[in-house]
Structure formats: structure tokens, C-alpha cells
Image (cartoon, rainbow, N blue to C red; front, side):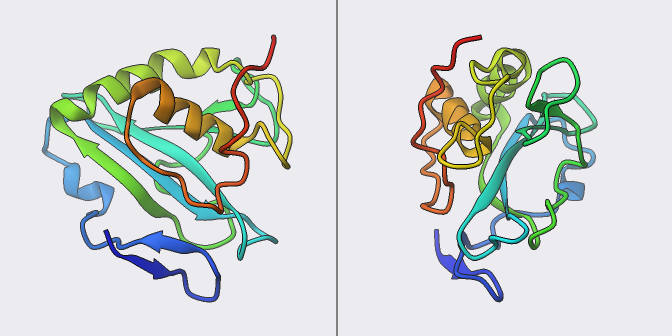
Length: 165
């Protein structure tokens, strides 16, 4: 995959050509798992915030799962549908880091939907070094075996999700 710079930033993002807008999935019954990223306001040049947009096979809508700095709702810092599936977080446009579709996406969708509420660090958030949104994304990738490498700007990705409740 080609990498291109994000306008005005030092953040390198994957080539977005292979990723159609979510509206392209209307009418499809395939499961879809997307890992999104967007730059963080105030530190756009050095850090991203990731999240998962998932849709089960046969479902009509996408669900967004992420870890947010403010705890809220039943899952602590883990938030479900805080924003629409592809909405940015204020630092610049959102971009797709990785995508799976069809049978390959189904185990990711199942894991994110059923295990995110029990993410081990759901009650703890530390901007730097973590655990934070990048720690959560890395946890999902490791637990599911989804072979995606988060970029260096995913600060916190190297913090293990071994928090105690």
C-alpha cells in the first residue's frame, strides 16, 4: 500500500484509493471491518486516534467502537457510537488504515462487538504513554490476529492491555 502525507501534517497515511466511502456498502450484505484513524487536535503532526467501524453480515448500519479520553456510558472509556462511523475527531479528516470484507471480517466484527465492553483497560486512560485509544486498537489487532501495523504516530500502541479492574 502506498503512503502519502496528510495535508499540512507530518502524519503518513495509507493510500485511500482502495477504500470507497461507507455509502458504497449500501445494498451489500457482507460483513465489514474497518480500522480508521484521524489526527488529534493540537498535536496533529505527531499523533493519531484510531477506531473500528464494523458491520455484521446482513446488517444495514455500521457501529463505531473506540476508546475516548472521557469515560461515559456502561463501558468506561470504551465508547460505542460516540460519533458516526467515519467522523473525524477534530484534527483533520479521517482515513482508513485497514479494511476486511466478507468472511475475513466476520471474526473481527464478532470480537469487537462482544469483547470491547470488557477491554481490560476500559476504566483507565492515560494520554501518554497509555493505555489510550491506540492501546485499545492494538489489543483488538493482537487478540484477533488481524495483521495490521499501527503507524509510529499511534502513541500508546506499545502499552499492554493488562490493566486491573
